[in-house]
Amino acid sequence: MNHLALIEKTQQLIAAGDIVGAESALVELADAEGDAALMVVLDMLPPKDILAVIREYDNSRESIVNLLVTPEQFARAVVIEKQYKDLTRTHLRGMMNAIIFREDADPLEFINAIGDLEGGSEALADYFTEKWDRIEAFACNGSFDAMKDTGELISKADLQARSYERPQVEQDEVADHDWMELAWLLRYQNPDLFIEMLTVLRAKARAHDLGAEDDESLDDEDDGKVETGDTDRGQATPAARDSDEESAI
Image (cartoon, rainbow, N blue to C red):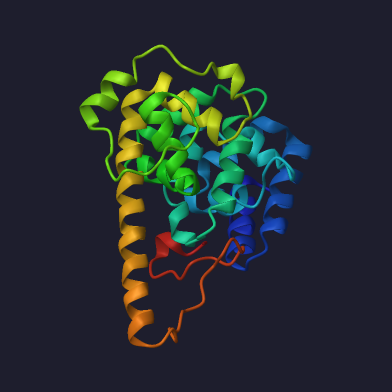
């Protein structure tokens, strides 16, 4: 099968929701023609189709696609992951940990590639959403121990100054190939991106708090009888799509 035919087959399988089948077709190419051939095909696939495959695999379920995707290809996929509306961020964290910290990779190449794209800081903020208080503490004092919430946040100027301080925690102490290590690399290896990500993360946390306050008001008005819609919580089901760009996801 030539590369164009394989790409068409892969996209058809993804559009049909058969992610395993799509990944298998790509693996067959690598088995038959080598990793270089697969890398050529990955470079020809739209980011939305690469994303559809890599988000379904993590350290517990490895894929050869995750092992070969380049920082630039990965970054273009990561910034559109939000279209899936996965409220748990399970797939986002799984694929980022698996790829950024893969054995042969330089994590900073992936981090910098994400930061270079519009929407990169938002994708990173989504990754850290459930750890907001721990990231805020790390920004403030270099420790991941959550602080008491006083309602006051360290200023951007202070953040910039503290980003260049000697680390309170060494990298090997947080080398978990997970959120702590990623936060450490951001703060001490790309502080500008760390501050940009934290700014977005704060805005998301504030929006969440305002939403919770609104929900409480509705609960008071309706005696607790508030209807909620169905959401995609970590399932493989894609978000609703309205454009051709989103057609494969």
